[in-house]
Length: 106
Image 1 (tube, rainbow, N blue to C red):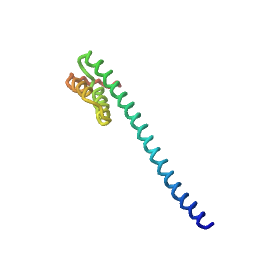
Image 2 (cartoon, one colour):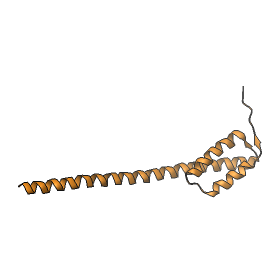
Image 3 (cartoon, helix red, strand yellow):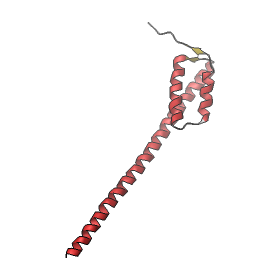
C-alpha cells in the first residue's frame, strides 16, 4: 500500500509541474503572437498616416513645421517597429520641402 502511495505521489509531483510548464509556455507564445499582431497593426496605421501627409504636402509643395514634427515622430515609431525603406524615401522627400510656420491664433 505504501509503495502504491509513493508511486501516485511521485506521479502527481511530476504531472503538476509539467502541466504548469506547458501552460506558461503556451500563454507566453500566445502573448508573443498577439503582441506581433498589435505591432503590425500600429505600424500599418503609422504608414497610412505618413502616406496621407505625404500626398497632401507633396501636392501643396510645402509643409507646415508642426506637421513635419508630427511626421518625424510617427516615422521614428514606424522605424522602431521595423518599418521599411519605402516610407523613409517619402519622409526624406517631406524633409526637403519648404517649411512654413503657422502663426498661433490669439
